[in-house]
Length: 79
Image (cartoon, rainbow, N blue to C red; front, side):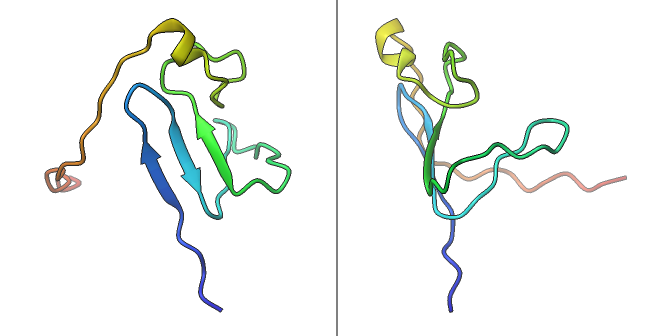
């Protein structure tokens, strides 16, 4: 059986959407209970009352941020 890859989509003026199989953890390593969801949107505007999840506040508050795909430079070598 082939494992499903996780797809991450950054929406202009909106959230980051995760699709597939994934876990989300807080800084202490505790997992959020996602109730079997395989699609989730994460807040980018910082205004959601349900952080880290998107609640649509970005649309009501006029959040604007466009992100186009680009190549990142190679990582710096660890010293």
